[in-house]
Length: 533
Image (cartoon, rainbow, N blue to C red; front, side, top):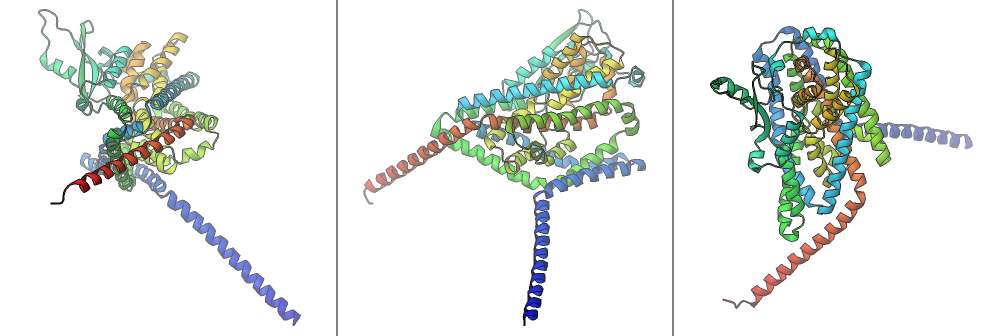
């Protein structure tokens, strides 16, 4: 009897252990399934990037026709157009709804903290790039033979002062509707001498607005000619002017109380609708990104030769980006927030991949909003304030690129830079990066300003045009991450003010609700006092 009971107990124990094992396996399986479900969009986006690289390099040996290349890149073009379609309404709605939800004093504090952070990180990137370029010495005088002769050596470039003044003109637009379509910029045209007529065709070509890397260059064969500075408008959204107008409008909208409540709700609703559109577009990301990357790889001529010639330059840029993203940014995050910074970084993988594929911080802005608000739980009042501003003035990667490229070209030209010229490179790179546009290859135009400041040959900058399609993507990730980490730091520094703002908003909503109830009661009394017909 005792033996039979022991055997039954052993069988029960064995069955329980098997059930425990099965339960543990099921828990592990459910955990992995939950991880995959939470990160499915990131995995799909990453697969799109890898697929684009594989397709691009696999089809290069086939020598495809231009029509075929256009068809391969066409889905990516549509994807980019859809993303850019949402940028302007998203920026307007986010800034107005975000700034109106905070009082004017708090808006001023947040704006000051944001600007100081952006200025400090841009200066830090310029110093980092300059230091790495001086240590690694990527420039080789023998590379100057590979420079293609262009008209840049005979061109009149805008100065740093012109760039800064253009920045002010764009921040304070004279027409908000024009700001949605055009940007102000300075150009130089040859001054007509008495008795020496200027060819009208050449003049119209030189002064015509353009969005290419030579936008600020005026070709002219006579270097002794006198130049006239004029301000023109070129196609492209003046994001700085729109940002300034929306910040002022939203801040003042929050001060008029109940009368502005409907307008605030209107822009908040627009923001929510745009974010729903972003959710739908996200499922098109793998196709769009793979098409963009494959099309770009297939369209580049002699990609192996170019990469070999400029390998040390690319390595210097990549090392600077790696050090900033994985060391400096993580240290800044940990010092201020005392949290694991790498968890925050991993939460931004999808916008990073999108920014890398599109080479535009602005194009990745809708996805950045979604990840920051929903995944990383950053206060939406901060993200709606910081991200659109950072998208336009915080160009950490651009500051790094301009500083490295300036010293690279100086080394390639066999120039020896003194301490004053090195400081000039750092300051010029910082100032120029903050006047940069969040569009692909904008840094190339600003590089010419930095080269002019140290009297380096502008013509040698043409060597970098062939690889900018790749380097631009690397530095875009720096720009994007700089905005996101800025939002996290500013939120932490503003946490006490945000709590006070929450209390004020609660009582404001209570006042609006009570006022509405009073209005309804008065309407009811008026109707009851009317004689029955």
